[in-house]
Length: 113
Image (tube, rainbow, N blue to C red):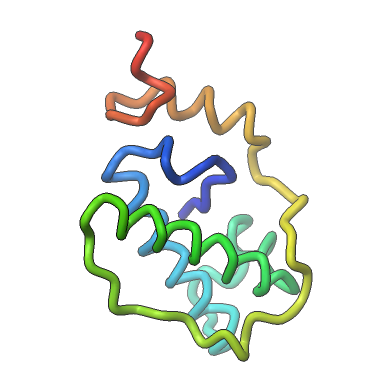
């Protein structure tokens, strides 16, 4: 489970769509008070920051549309409360870039391998 803290336009198709799917899972766990994954570090860092998670979702959706993907899973903006920015990280953005560089994918960070 991961929400990247990197620009969506630098993510490959798989990481972009995977993050979108996982963002919805985290949103559901937090807003519906589900038990599954509620103690996962990635979920915990978004507690109290649904406004920031909503903003991340909007960035992902914008990039998805630019790439020609359809999007039919809007989040309820009324639930987007709390902090509007995310400052807690499981891995820092610099570490996230290093993680992406180890993957065999088309993320921008792998283009100079």
